[in-house]
Image 1 (cartoon, rainbow, N blue to C red):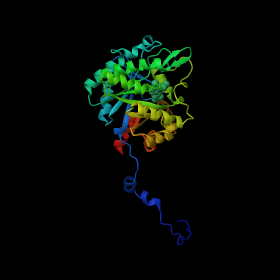
Image 2 (cartoon, rainbow, N blue to C red):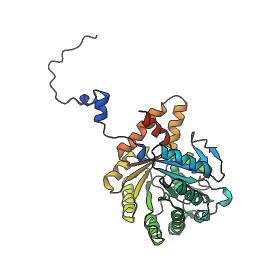
Image 3 (cartoon, rainbow, N blue to C red):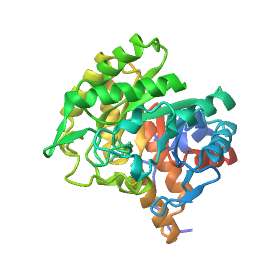
Image 4 (cartoon, helix red, strand yellow):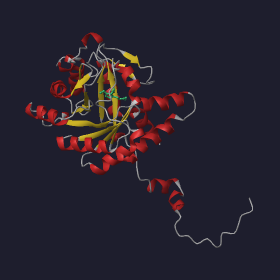
Amino acid sequence: MPKLQSTKNLDFISRPRRNRKSASIRDLTQETWLSPKNFVMPLFLTEKNGAKEPILSLPGQFRYGPDLLIEKAREVLALGIPGIALFPKIPDHLKDPMGRESANPDGLLPRTVRSLKKSLPELTVITDVAMDPYSSDGHDGILSEGKILNDETLSVLGQMALVQARAGTDYVAPSDMMDGRVAYIRAILDQGGFSDVGIISYSAKYASCFYGPFRDALDSTPKTGDKKSYQMNPANRREALREICLDQEEGADLILIKPALSYLDIISLAKEVCDVPVAAYNVSGEYAMIKAASEKGWLNEKAAVLETLLSIKRAGADVIFTYWAMDAARWLAEQ
Ligand code: PBG
């Protein structure tokens, strides 16, 4: 026992540590809880039944053939996770500058959505609306003479959303960052009789380096240039506010911030100003960072992931898209 100074003269009343005294009290006073119910599991889809292709820069994640993807989605549900976000890898020979394959009702994505909905009707299916998986240029919009054409792209996005709605998707999720696309897609869905299909808008999507592993997964890296003329400048916060408010006015049912970790302030801003639920996408590069460090033994993966997801939730995300959804659901069940 070290020799201690007298503490007799200390008379403060506030002792925050009282609320940290025991595990039971810490539970009682915990402000934020993670639940698998708020997770969305992103899944990559490929053409061949039976396929389970590892993705080098996303260890533990695979591109699944349609049959195995349904089995994976069944596991997702069994873990208490309500939804999946689907990303198809389109073979090169089906890619063109206009992304025409995205409007094919018998394409890989709509086909798979139909069978998912048949086998697992209670699963929430979220489908991405953007041209990049289908575009031979690897951009989210139509490229012409070095420029991305906004208004011409809207009609491609509208048709893509309609095909996905017809296949039975619950939410279309425009991730393209074209101006006016939420209102445009809403109108097309409503005219098509799909007023119950929702829109999760990637409202504040930044031109981030953290999408690298995702682009490896889909082989969707832009062939020329970058995405800075449509995705947001990472330096901007007030611009995010503008994008979020516009999307809400245009009819978005949820708004999404992406990436999550370097943009926790934007998530918190969105939570303050939005009436609709706020989602955040814990993106591929964020996953890869912790995976790599834990493979090296420099971080404990479970602890790092749960702390990370908690921080996203604490910042204000109601819904978290994360490649760890299934692992985290298992870890939370163990706790
Ligand atoms: C495509 C899209 C991207 C992601 C989701 N939808 C990549 C991009 O914009 O280049 C990234 C997701 C991730 O990195 O996990 N519109």
